[in-house]
Each structure stands twice: as structure tokens, then as C-alpha cells.
Image (cartoon, rainbow, N blue to C red; front, side, top):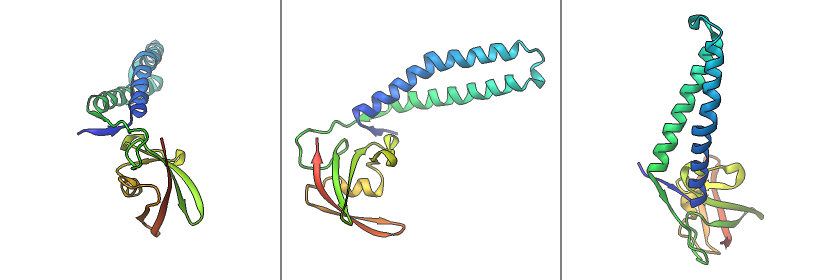
Amino acid sequence: MKKTFTRSGLEKLKKELVFLEKEKRREVAEKLKTAAAFGDLSENSAYEEAKNEQTVLETRIAKLREMIKDAQVVDSKSGTDIVQIGSKILTEINSKTSQFEIVGETESDPFQGKISCDSPIGRSFLGKKKGDVCIVKTPSGEKSYKIKEIID
């Protein structure tokens, strides 16, 4: 299934994949080799731990490869006056200004202001213009965000 990414989000995944394949694999292989040298593998907790780490690593590598293979990159068009994936926006809610960046689902990091285009708030911003008010339904009730500015 295709996942949407900003160009920088996809590059971040590619860098992680290279790190895991080249450095982390070598590190885990060394742990396995060292643990195996302790002898009886049936009661070797260090070996079991290293094997588990290897499984988690290989699972992550496979997941990254799949995401990268199926990635759909969305380039935001600079100078546009419409919110789209990749847009950074300034909003106002209850006289408080916040900045958000609309990103693909897997790039989401609300603590960094990166909001998924598939989240309720992200969907409400898409296609809007400066001055528009977006109503977002949240568990604590509806919230109204006014788009103050769309930043390139």
C-alpha cells in the first residue's frame, strides 16, 4: 500500500536503512559472535538476547525497504496559497499561535509540530487558505484553528 512522504521524510528513511544495513547489522553480528563464544547456546542468555536483537533489526530493515519501495513522494509547490502536504502553517487557536508542518503518516511527530495528512487535524488543513478557519473534532470537543499564514 502506497504511503505518502515529503522528500525529506523519505530521505530520512533511506538514511536509517543504510545505517541499519551497514553499521547496526555489523554490530549485532559481533554480539552474536561474542555470545556464541561463551559455549552452550541452549542456556546462553547473551546469545538469546543478540538473536532477538537481530530479529528486531531484520524486521525493521524489511519494513523500511517496503516503505521506501512503495513510497509516494509529494513535493509541495512553493509560493502556493493552499495548504498541502509539505506545507508549514501558522495557526491561531484561543489567541495562541502554533506552527505545524503537514507530513506523510509515517513522518508524523506531534511534539515537533509535524502533523500527519491522514490525521483529523491534518485533513482539516489540507486545501485551506490563509484566513480560513478549520473545525477539528477532538475527544474533548470541537476546536477551531484559524490559518494565519502558509510558510514555504
